[in-house]
Image (cartoon, rainbow over all chains, first blue to last red; front, side, top):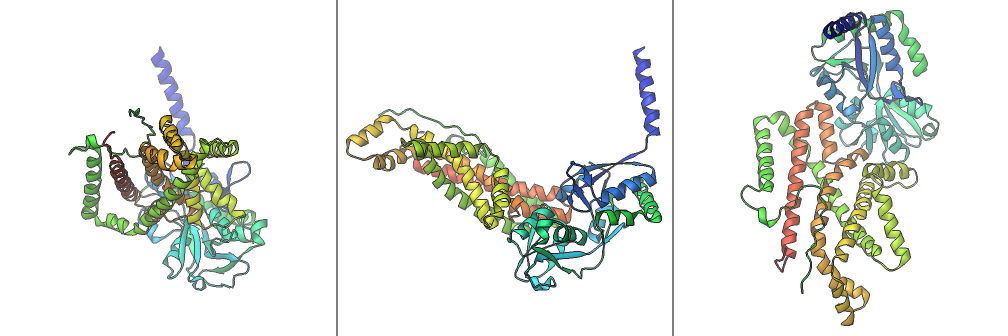
Length: 244
Length: 261
């Protein structure tokens, strides 16, 4: 009798399980406003989040977000702790060697934020000064490769901005929407900081990273992104989170 | 003169090797030689990425040493003052020292680091290294204060009475009679604190201080070689800690002129 009940329950679970949409667990480092951050209600929100939710709706799957620290985020992907990373990840040749990327969904450039009184207009003029960036980001790679700049890596971009605001470092390099968020939007920071330059390191494209060879999740995500792009929903999110 | 043997057992960090188990197969030797052999083997067998990692780290190791060295010096001074304050008859000094210990021991070191660097950073602009050293030594000063107090209290009252009756004043008694004897009781737990402090310097990497751990994290975040990088980091920390524990045990031997313990 018990066996019958158990197997019956299992059967029901299996059937409903198949009927439920596939849930894709997405890791994000929610310290990167306005792309992904934690709002006052402790929810993970931002451009990337809205975009992925829309992509999931279009692609017919579910998404669940998980907040993960940036410098271990790709290690967790490799270890299979989640299905994908959508956290303003720039598609680079280096990263392509260890993970697969979806089609690009957003274009950014690197921006240099400095105090208002600084005269610097290029990264070259920061020679001999200390410039901060978030650990393991393309912004940090850019300053590290620059001769004569003291590169300082922070766990979170907000801590780098705080140090810049407090005058401990001379500049911060990060993606332009994030730079704009701090230097142009935040009341206390915008009185003291400005965007000095957009670096000539070229255009960068965000993609969703999945574990190498995980075509199942990659196809789902690509299908979703494709649909979102066709419907032009991205502009809506851009207006909502980034403005003009 | 029979003096009761007192052991203050503050177990934390690599054990300081005692003379008894200095044989060929002592835990210290096994870990030390094992770590060195493993490190060399990894570097030779797979230079990419292991040799790259090892080459990437030296400036981080120097920073870790600097933070440790300055913090130990400052923490010893703070610890001595606090310890003396705790046994002082002056009520105000006593209250200050006791409150300091209670407050500092009640706040996690990580929070103290954030507090001194980011929270106070709005008012006082101390460089990252200075903030790191201050936070580490203020924290460990509180723990060492308790060790100093216990060490001083472990010296028999007769010593004080004898010194006082010979005409020493209170300060002289403390510095010429009590402390030189207490030092032998104090050294093992203080040595443990040194080792714990060295390991806890890894926490300063959150202040963007480019110490051993942060250098490793930078390497791992760029190369995605998490396993390899953190293996090397762990081995290097282990080697440094073992060397420090050896140093402390040598110091202990030197102080053991009566060959008692």
